[in-house]
Each structure stands twice: as structure tokens, then as C-alpha cells.
Amino acid sequence: MIMMTTRQWLATAAGVAILLSLPLFLPNFWLVNIFGRAMVYGVVALSLTFLAHYGGFVSLAQTMLAGVAGYAVAMMAPTAIPLGPMAMPYYAAIPLAVLAATIAGAIVGMIAVNTREIYLLMITLALAVGFSLFAQSNITWFRGYEGIRNIVGPEIMGLPFRAPLVFYYVALGVAVSMFLLVLYVVRTPFGLVLQAIRDSDRRAAAIGYYVGLHRIASFALAGFIAGWGGVLITFYNIGITPSSIGLWATVAVLIMAVIGGLGHPLGAFIGALIYTVMDTFASSIIGHDRFNTLIGVVFLAIVLLSPDGVWGFGKRLTAAVGKAPQRTVDREKTS
Amino acid sequence: MSASPSHSSDLPALTLEGVGRRFGALRAVSDVTLRIEQGERRAILGPNGAGKTTLFNTICGDYPPTSGKITFFGTDISQLKPHRRARLGIGRTYQSSTLFSGLTVRENLYLAVRAMKPGRFSLLKAGKGSADLVRVQELAQQVRVDHILDTRIDAVSHGQRRQVEIGMALAGSPRLLMLDEPAAGLSAAERPELVALMAELPRDLTLILIEHDMDVALANSEKVTVMKDGEVVVESTSDKVADDPMVQAIYLGEGH
Image (cartoon, rainbow over all chains, first blue to last red):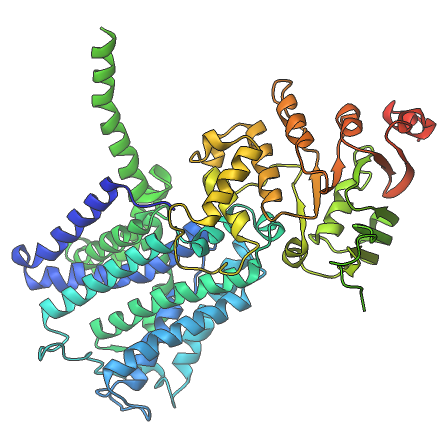
């Protein structure tokens, strides 16, 4: 019933065209370690933004759900060291891993179904920390502290997944698909109900919706999105360890989503890019030990100056720029 | 077993038998017995804190009764969840506006229309001219908001929100409509629109109305139930209720 406006389509198309042509201008380091990495972490942040903006659920379990997919693909990967008992080709392991994250998302949604705000935050945080501690202490499946190595990803058209162009374009394809998926879903009946629950869950129930079931389904969809991010992050890191899904990783994804702006799915990717750039270059400027200080200061500055993040700041900026010429036109009319 | 609701035209629309609702030690509603016939228009009056809205909440299921029994066209609904009651045909509005403020008027009405059908989890958008969107248009005309369909709720006036609320409650073609102070907070200019809208509601629709404004309440009802301190104190016809000494005492603020 509601479509993207022509301007939004043009902006999206222009953005995708620029990202598609980036390999012409940028060295591999920027393609893979900055843009590629930002896009795969951005997908996990997107799953958080989706729940927070459209459902009103701030979930700290999204990194954990990415971790479920990451560990699942690692356990099933044919190249894993040590090789798991369920080794299978990547084309089967990847969808199964995303499915595992989707189911895990539904389970998180079920556990948290009656909680909101600070209690929802705490229960999802508890699940996230619990899962990472479990992965850390379980040797049989999760290989404890060491984790699972050599998850190199499938070959695509004879090229290794780690080839910069392959990784970049796959990451771009997944990021754009997930982004468009969110924009589409929130205009369907399912997505509208989600926003209705955010605005007034009692009324949503009063007109006939089963709020609990919708909440669980939205967590499952967020798990699906985070799962794709988790699979690609595991390929990017060539493996997975408990620290990659621990408390700090959980907070990092939250910081990305907030810096970028929770008000729009694009914010997740903007935030992930800013975070990645700072994480990469902070060590050469102020030393690696100071990264937390730097990201903390940037986080504070953004939350204080623009509570809706960089995306919100950009929106106000374009609104101000857009108004300026209009005002002159009005003046011409009146004079 | 309860009787089949569809063939029994002599069944009351709604009965409450000894219904009570406690919140901890507070008895918000105690031992209310009511019988509302099909097509009846009933007003519920009473001072603030009398338990009127809590009574609504026990009927729609937001806070199910802690004692007693509620039947709807012969079906025991005492412990059903709110969405199950809505699908049986109970529509309601809320005292304070609880619309979906981030969505447009059209989307609010659309969600209410969709709620009664399968496909609540649908991932397919409605095509232009689909039956649901046509129904949205009809509802919007019925409650006179068809000129602001694409405006977001947080940008429409209080009076129009009340009209959208009624439109949403009507979307599922309910057999029982419960309006919780529909005229509260309306300006003198907005009030006639609402009264006219209520006068146009189909005659076979059973209506329960909570209203502070005596005139609005009496103009839109045949029978009146007066509540005080969680109990029913008077039940009377609309033309006689104003003569009741108890009602006069309550409404003149005397006699506790």
C-alpha cells in the first residue's frame, strides 16, 4: 500500500551504483577491511535496528544470534580445523546456519516475550553472555577458548571466498538484500502489525492481533538477518572464537547501531562504517589501548549532539538545505 | 457446553454474573451482574474511580475477571485472551487515545480490517483496490476521516483521533461495541460530529458507552447502569435515571 518514493528509489540506486564501482577506485585493504567489514557487521547492527525502530524492542542478543550462525557454519564447514562430525559442503552449511540463527531468534523472542524496556535489555544481555560463556567452556562442540579455525568460506566461480573482490561483492549483495528486505517487510501487514505493537500493544490485541506471536516472529526474522551477518563475519575472521560473541562484541554492535542512528535501517551501516574506520586507524593515531576511550568519546558526543545518530543529523541537515531554496522561491512569489 | 451462538436470537448479547476484579488488595470491581440484550444501547455512568473502565477491561480481556463469569452470545469468554474476544466480535475504544501514532490513518484502519482475517503474518503488500483497502475507504467515510487518510496519527487532531478509534473498533464488524468516554476532551466544535457519527451506527449493533457527560450518555442510550466504588448501584431506563436520588447525589457531588 505504501511504496518507496521515486526519490528514495533513486537514492538507493545511486548508493548501490557507487558501492558497486568502489573496487575501481579503492585498494583491496579499503574494500575488504573497511567497507567489507563494515557491511557484514552492519548486517548484525541492522537486525538490532529493525527490532528497535519498528518493534520498540532493544535486543542485546543480536550478536549472540550472529554467533549461533557463525558457530553453526563453523561446525559444519568442510574446511574446519578441527573438523566437526557434521562436516558438509558450504552450500548446505550456510543455509542451515542461517536457519539455526532464525530458530535461535524465535527462542530468544519466546523467552523475552513478556518483557519490555530495561527488562528486555537485561534478559537479552543475560542470554548473550550466557551463550558466550557456554561456547567458551564447551570443548566437544565449540572447542572452548580456541574456537574453530580455517572457516575460509566456499569457492565462488572457482575463486576463493577470501579474494578481495569476491568477499566485497558478496558482502555488498547480502547487505543490500537485508537492507531492502527490512524496508519491504515494514510495509507489509506483518511489518505494520509490528509497528502497531510498538505504538500500542494493548490496542493491537484489542483489534484482534496475538501480540506475543508477532513478537516472536519478529525476533525470528531479526535472527535470520543477524545469521547472514554471522556467517559472513566468520568467513571474514576465517574462524570463530568465544571472544567474537562476548560482551564487548555485543556492546560494539549496539554502539554501531546508536552512532549510525536507530531511526532508519541505513543508520546501522553508517554506524558500522564509522566504528570500523575508527577501530582500524585509532591505533596508528592514539595507540590501540586508547581505542575504547576514543569510541566512548565519539559515542558520547553523538548521543549528546544528535540522539538519533548520524542518520538523524543528516536528515535534519538535508531538511535545512532543502528548505533554504524553497524560502527564496516563496519570497519571489510574494514580491 | 455453551449453546451455539449463531441460531439463538433470544440470547442476551452479554451477561456478567458476579464479576469481580481485584488488583492486589484493591477491589476495583466487585460482584457486578449485568444483562445486555442484543441491539441494546447501554450507558454506564459513575464518578471517577467507580470501576467503569475496569469493567470494560474485564469484558475485553485486558484484565480478565478474578471472579465471576462473562458470556458473550452464550459463549463463556471469562478467561479468553483479548485477541480471541476481539475475533468473536467485541470491539472497543480506549479512554486515552492509544492509536498507532507512527502510522497513517489509512494504516491504522487497514490493520484493524486485517486483524479479523487470516494472513496476519502476511509478507505480501495489499494491491491497489484490494478488498481490504476498499473496506478501509468505507470505514473512513463512515467515521468521516476520509480526507486525512495519508496523515500520520501524531499529526491529526484529538477529535479526529477519536473518530479513527471508533472506525478501528468497527472494522471487524463487531456485534458489541464498547466506547470508553468517546467525547472526553472534545471541543464544542468537535462534539456534534461525534454525536452524529454515533447516531449513524447500525441499529443491530449492541453498544455499551461509558460517558461522563450526562447529556451525551442519555441521548445515546436506552438503559443506564450507574456504578460507584466498583459496584452497580442503580439500573434504570434513560428517561428515569435523572430522577433517581442516588444518581442526583453522585452527580451533585454529595452523599458519600
